[in-house]
Length: 319
Ligand SMILES: [Zn+2]
Image (tube, rainbow, N blue to C red; front, top):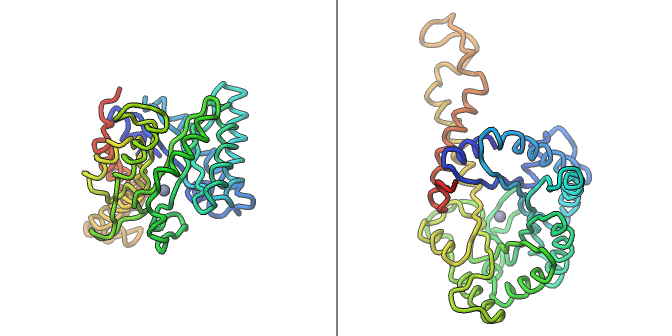
């Protein structure tokens, strides 16, 4: 979270920080049990307050979002929405900016019906809803779609229109659609991922026709899941077809780890015992094994990687 804020300040750009349910539970502490997803609610709420407290110090606008929420996880979003409703009553704005519902494993009609229900509740708080159509392949946060039916990895324009029609009918609705175009969670060897961003362009054209809009209109706001490891040309193409948000998890995980890895490698001789290093058998190593040292190194490599993300996503010098 701090690395995201630091990177956003350096890029002079707004940033989106999102919690997965597993990440929120981790933030609460793995020692807590997670009955009814209460720890995952508490972790995300605590993270939201952390970010809100510091965003003003860093001087960056932050969108606070939560990631994939499958049907069985809906109590997690319910818990966070209750927090946003209370926050709205007290301060005139929700605690979180937006949530994602991922009901892509349910029949399309049920996916849409549940999203409409939540959109109604969230629109009253001026919150945005992200929904998923089709399946993001790969593995993330314990959800494994590595053996998904290949056809489900590519959304059809008719399905995008069904969602657009249903959600835009809700007063004050703000929503994004994570439509599948062959994208996957995780980073794989080149050639294993076949992205087809033109699905997004075809969807924009189809919906524009339904709405009687002119050529080149982009009535849909799309989300690109599994941005890590993607070719910059695919990213630029997807943006040109109306992608307004891209998730980058695996690449930032690697960047964070790489900072710890390189710190440990560079200071190996100082990290094997509390006392004794190449400068003397009685020299203390406290300054090297202070956990802030490897974590700061992780933050620095993460800030550098996020700088590339801001640049790739046309998000530099925005304010
Ligand atoms: Zn995702």
